[in-house]
Image (cartoon, rainbow, N blue to C red; front, top):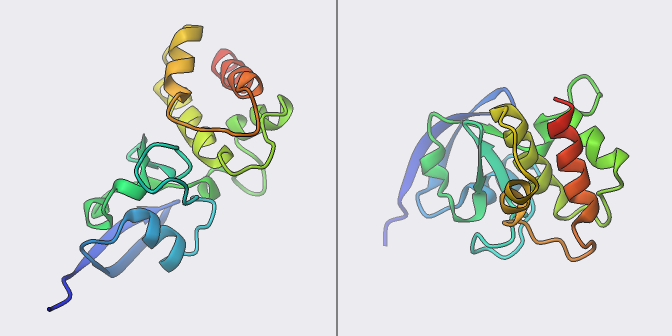
Length: 157
């Protein structure tokens, strides 16, 4: 059987990328295996845990169930793209300040989802914040510190 490949181009963390991919390959696989962006984590593989979250055109997306070919022409942000000139983003600082980092496996996805919330600029209630982060599994915490970090950065935008 002939392998089906397609040439795609997208911007990841401000850098133009062009490559040929198998049309069945997930964006997660391309980011980790081809571009070596290992801040994107492989968790469940079915879009349930949030560990593989990236921003595509500013929206949080589970990259494990998003085909790489769909990224053609898009702007992608991974956790590696948030810090600028060695300085953490405001969202990353809030997570550190609130102690919302334990093992760190879920942190990149949560930080990216929080970044999208901040960039939307909406005022969210406590229940709305909880709903927005509910797509992320964290086995180390009870989510209190994560919630505190999200609330802090949303209140101090």
